[in-house]
Length: 402
Image 1 (cartoon, rainbow, N blue to C red):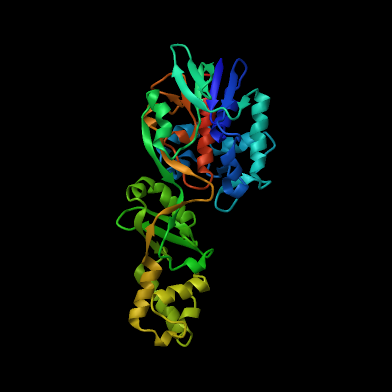
Image 2: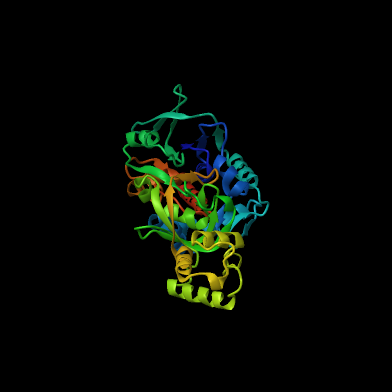
């Protein structure tokens, strides 16, 4: 049985490795001169392989697109299977406090070397600089054209070409009869042109809620101030869940930050008044409240009209009310986005309605399978996108092989 895998990323390699059983001849085609490029840069070069969340019902809640459809797939090959697979190949993973899992070596090269070795041992032929320029299908086989001049055939075709920001780059899949959900970016940071926190880049709030004004989109977690705007897990998660809405808004919207999500506005005001009454002679701008970093606290006070010389007993009720409002519902005008590091994730791709999620086989064209982000599947940060790649790659690779 001849099997072609298009795409030399995580999903493509995992699919190829698991398709390469006795009686199968597997060729993996990568258009560039590098394989596993996304694995290389993931997690700042450490590779966030997966997440410790092992319950499929909880795991699927981390996927803005594809979560419901992946439930059964995660039962068959979930995070524990991923951990065991790498462990069986002498790659041990460690868990960080937020649940993300990395190789103990802290190097993505460990994961790359493992996948390359596994593919070699399985007999997978890996070809680089082999762009697929055309795919046709006869009654018996797939006819794949490479570089416009070389033709190879396959009984089974696994597409693992990843996400792409341009709809036109999915046209060859449309030509095979598939519907494409228009791609838009997911997992990005927010640009704030008039940024009052530009001089505080690198400062963070350990727990905040970021909301999109006028919507129900809201996420909680650490928040990071950058020279271009805001980032951190809360913002990245929000960008994923609201990806299509924000694309429709052309990334022009108002973000609302609550620095004390565990308190109601009245509870926050009461707590601040207790703080003020306990420190009446201290200068307000240098007498930070609770968990707020001192430089950020000074900025909040400045935005509330409280100077660095004001003592608490000299601060008027109007300024205190303004400060409370800033602490629990600071409005920032966002205009634009920035890709998070080198990690580009798309919302959109092959419609899951046209994929048999038990096998990852096309419902339109028998023998055609999908793996990874080429489908309308994407997760938030934390190892979830790689887990979807391992899961769908495993299922696509093992389905329909000898």
